[in-house]
Length: 208
Image (tube, rainbow, N blue to C red; front, side, top):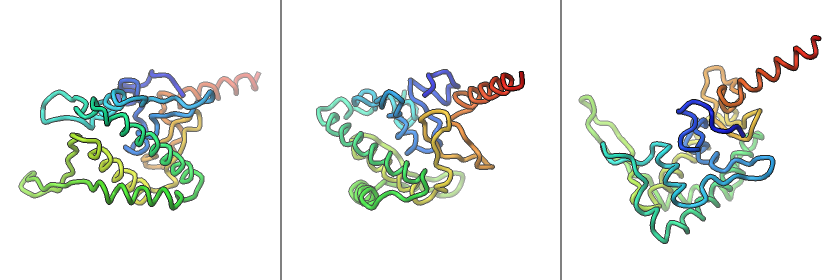
């Protein structure tokens, strides 16, 4: 996995955001490297930083700040459950990338989260019409479960699975939203240019 060196929109506070989907950006918080997995969410404090980097926590025009519950004793239990779910999600994404569907137990797990933590919606006036919006107010762990469950359900049921891929040059996953659907790398800035340069140099050596 490449070190931080891409554009600001890709690397924020040590976290990579190239997945084009909340679910995949969340999955990429534990990249599996050659020497083993690297945990980017070891505790609630790190998770708060990720929420901030992802732009998921804000209160009106106030400065974005991690939710208060991340500093409570129950936060550690929440983080353990969150990391376990992320690994179940990894197996589901790997299945999708291989051309299969996630197993029934994972689908059941997502359905249970959708039932236990339904996402709230409100109607707001916007431009002379009513618009339905889904506010995210992370005043308790369940708020994130609702957001994540909806995001996972969206990935499983509302995206083209052939566009869910792993970078050809590293361990990062992404959803290809390009028009041609031919994206091969997590980012042109991180891996794409590196691969192209290596290919060019290899061709030069062969041509000599």
